[in-house]
Image (cartoon, rainbow, N blue to C red):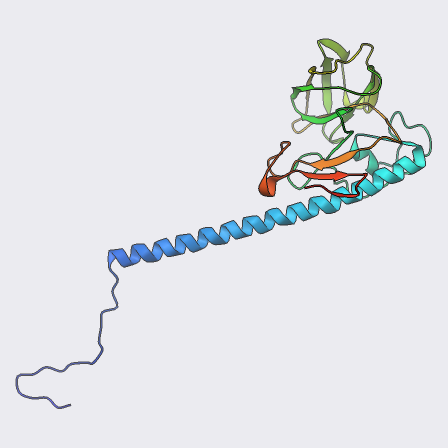
Length: 253
């Protein structure tokens, strides 16, 4: 390759390394799509891990409930009792707690695991400051069950509280010092649309657990439930309810 008169030096295959605005836009779009896909995959993996954790914990809770039934001939609807050395109110003999260690009565999504009797024969819920109201059907054996109250977190003080059921005061002047405690409902519950109103004051983060009946006879069937990511009954997909039925000894989700 020589230089001839009137010609210029040329470099074969030479090209510009600059990018047009359109090329930069396409590249940015590809990066965004890849990042979004990675975030979605990571979120799904994390959610699946929470589901697995919830199933492991529910199975452990179910085993502990069975141990309580064997040793006391009854059991409780307040799952944090399983981690206590002391017998809960209403269970007077045979308590050999703690039946579990670790205190995981809340699921990986931060909501309390639920233990309930089928056919609308129980009510249990943890209320956070300042409380709340609920409607529930009741088809329990006997229309005047006992109601039990307990602190959700013993480190958070409740200074005052009131429980109103169907317009009538069941408990008033509730404080952390007197909990847990059982109260007697001295009137019949309705077969539908019983209304409970829970209100209380205390330290930020305080919560109050309400359970009806206070103590469950040994022969009763039960479900253990996590409402999963959406925290409401009847979720779908990854948020579908995680349900353990003791008769099946398996998950029904």
